[in-house]
Image (cartoon, rainbow, N blue to C red):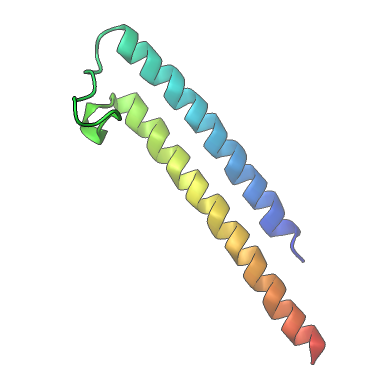
Length: 89
């Protein structure tokens, strides 16, 4: 009963990791080529507009996949709770 949530959650997690790795590679290449500006004095992280197009693509896909993973985990838990209440009656 919970296998679809588990399998889809694992696939989403693998996709998130793959896109995070490619984001790191693309970002490092862009920074080495001088295309990405340095961070500001007040903030150590880069802002969305400071990323390259490829970097934004991979970061967006990684965040979407992470959200899908957490959504599937919560969906699986909800189905488990509902199934437990239904089978109890």
